[in-house]
Image (cartoon, rainbow, N blue to C red; front, side, top):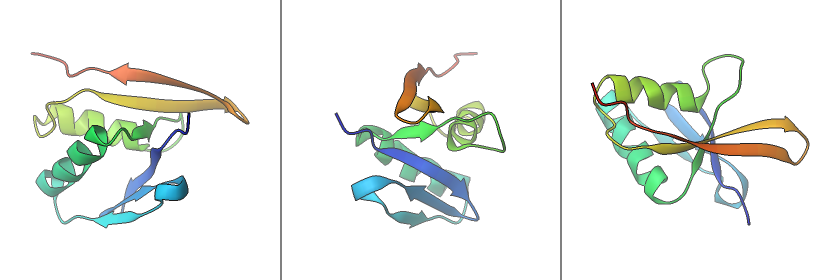
Length: 93
């Protein structure tokens, strides 16, 4: 199974990896939420690493702002070809 994932969300651009490598530009958080909503539906994972502000953290912020009302899959690596994926649920307040 090929893992497809979002590598970066910064400078008003969403960047994906692998054979689906592409960049999507956005101008504000609502537009970003629409883009990531579509990528979630297409099966993309969102990188979640301990350094910086990874895409998974950006999506969690959109969830907190109530701009993204959908769970998503995060991915992190522990070594070459060693990764884990996990579901990040929407927190209901």
